[in-house]
Length: 186
Picture (tube, rainbow, N blue to C red):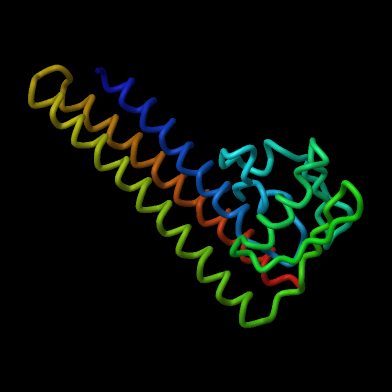
């Protein structure tokens, strides 16, 4: 593996860490309705646990209500129960074949707890990015020791990886700040 391949692989993994953070934060509830918070809920679909997004259409009715429209009419009660039993504290109501999920307003205390959770997720993402940097740097040192690349090449690659890490950390901070603003907005 060359220094260029190591840099490319590290950059791809850092992007995956950012995407993972974004999807993790999408599940954290804010004051506004977001269909993403229901996607991870598992529904019993003919004996198999299946993500809600695979058995129903998720959409927004308005800023505070999520519409869930099952693909099969028989799934309405099962989906309603799964949403109610989830740890999100939501109370769905079915109207024929459509399930409406109103998003209750968040208290100030709950908003602060959620911002702490967001910061924690951000720190975990930063740790993951720094671990990727460490692994890449160790790999480069091994290549230099085995005389596969020069010390200058190692230094340049290490600098590039540090720049990628710095950029990823800045991106993580921006994502966290945006999510905190979204949560704290009443």
